Each structure stands twice: as structure tokens, then as C-alpha cells.
Image (tube, rainbow, N blue to C red; front, side):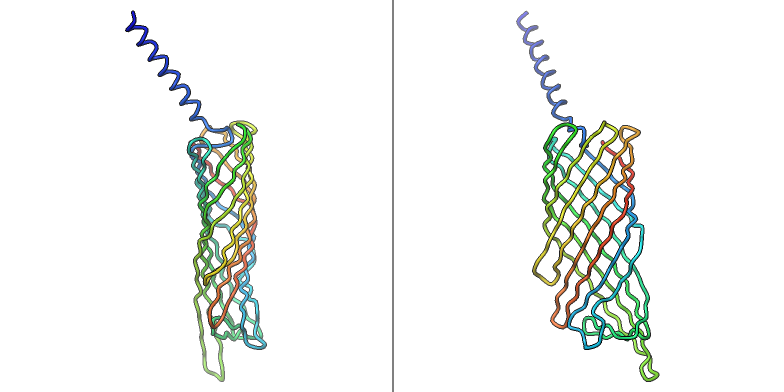
Length: 269
């Protein structure tokens, strides 16, 4: 009888521990263990290249392109121990533009005669990895985050001119990569298990080195899950990026501003 009682007691303790484990394994309703975002963003983009130490009469700012473009966008969120979150985000955008101008544009020691024409191509890759500590109630959670932002910019300039009947061509390539710490704030609210609201804001500033600058980003959106693990997210975001590169012979600042809606296919586990 004693052996039977011990066996039942052990079974009861094991069951209680299992129930506690299950309870602890359930995150807040506003959070998911694994969250996958795959979609695209329609961004209204403005890009300018501001060159300094120019010759007299040259242009100081070059318009690299304005307008709307659609880019791929991916995101991954992971939750550990119910309150520790990790988020990864990446997208890339770029523009190409041809223009003519009655003047010259000097950059990186090369002078481009814009009376004949200039073509510019630029690409910017933006990525981030962040840690969030989530706290709050089941339906409302707030996150404070730290992490790192990665950004890489590449610019190609190609100019063509005819001087005294002789064709002349010049081109230059500019690229830079930087990684800087980030601070982020986030809020999520669950109206129900299938409908949620979220807001996320962050910023990064890097000083020193050959490439410096800042990045500020804010986005807000709604998630809807008609199926338990599959859903849709719609958000609107705005990002401002400024990259400054210093050289002995020249320096330049790349200013980007883009905003617009994003749509993601959502999977959660």
C-alpha cells in the first residue's frame, strides 16, 4: 500500500510539474514563439548625394532619384523564456537615373560635365538584429530593446562629355559598410488571438571612422490570422538614413528618406 501511495504521489507531482511547464511555456497572447514575415514594401523614396570641397561653379547636391519602388522585405522574430525576444529584419532598395545639366559635378576628385550627361546608380542594404525584453499583461506588452543595425551603401557615377570634339568619359564607385548599436521601443496589443496591433520605433547613430551617419525608423501595423498559424500583416513605416563619408580629397553625404506601406504573409508557431 505504501509503495502504491508513493507511486501515486510521484505521478501527481510529475503531472503538476508538467502542468506548470505547460503554463510557463505559454507566452503572452500578443507574442509568438516563432514569427516569420515574408513580403514587400512600396516605398516613396528620395535620395540625394551632397558633395563637398567642390570647384567654384560646380553643383553641391545631386538628385539620385525620387519616386515609388517595390522591394522585398523579410523579418524573423523569436521568443525565449516567455519574455526574451530576438528580431531580425532585412531589405534592400536602389535607384538608377540619367540626367543632363548645364554645369559640372565634382566628386572624389573627378569632374563630370553634365552638359553631356551623367548616370547614377545607388543601392542601399539595411538590416538589423535586436534583443527585446517584453513585459506587461497578457494582451498588452511593451518591449525595450538593444541590438545592432547594419547598413551598406553603393553608388556608381558614369559621366560622358565631348571636349573639343574629343569624347571623354569618367566614372567612380563609392561604397561603405557600417554596423552600429541600436535602441528600440515596441508595443503590442492583442484584441484577440487572431487580431493584433503593433508599434515599433528605433534609432541608431554612428560617429567616427571613414563612414558615419544615423538611421531612424518607425512602423505601425495590424496582424490578422484567419488560420491559427497563417495570417497577414499590413503596416506603414518611415525611415530616414544619412551616411557621411570622409576622404582626404573629398567628402560626401548620402541622404535617404523613404516611407510607405508593407504587406507580409505571416506564419507563427
